[in-house]
Image (cartoon, one colour):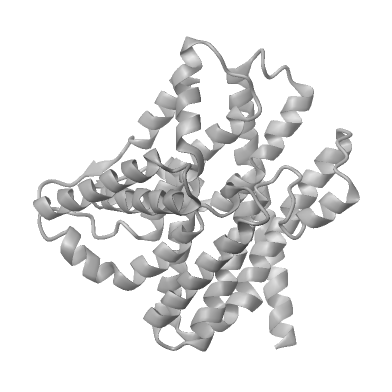
Length: 349
């Protein structure tokens, strides 16, 4: 799998553009460019989930196994960061009208898509005789338990949206509201530490970082983009802080949170200089939710009907292809569901 990983890295750089000295991409936070970055990370998330379903050994797989163990939860940090950034950009442009729609429109839609995805997992489990029990199935619909899907991420997103609504609905000043949101986020982590494993909450502050980056972007760019020396000095600081925090990441969840924040900022600065201008990556990023939440489903089904350990590469290709097809079908169906949902909201209004 090391070869497949290497080919995937090469694919990510196909069509990329690099700026020269004192030159930067001004559109590095635009939807199509951020979708390309999301596409990169969703590929590596697929690798990570794939590694959990198959036994890999031998010299040809050693680097892949090491990489998989090293990257851990860092893979989802950009998803949370871009989500927070996008929400804040919408609030800045649309104001109170948008804030009011968060609990009535955005949250219900995400949750509805999640519930339908959970139903698919439950059906697949029943078909193959994997009975999770009624309690676990019911709790999976409120993101507290999992029947195979990445429920922790959906819970993090839904909670982030609701905390954003509470903060910005009550407080008019954006900076104070963002500060309150950050405090709420820290409180959420502190509470979750008593109930769940670290991966449920150890990247949670990346969403708040996205909020702050949207608010401070213009000021930060004046520093980062002033000249090449300042840019590489800033990047070096973030990379150094990331490596330091990564070294001690197991000592405290807060150190790992800091590690994630430094990782995100380093990645953001890199995208100022390197533009991943790849249509395939943008396609994957556009379908992020469905690709992320559904990718374990083909892996689990193929595991039941296919000699996956004997043919790891075939298992990988089939799983990835099936995930993409399933995601396209799912997103097409969800557009229909969203239209019905929007029509129902308008009629009630």
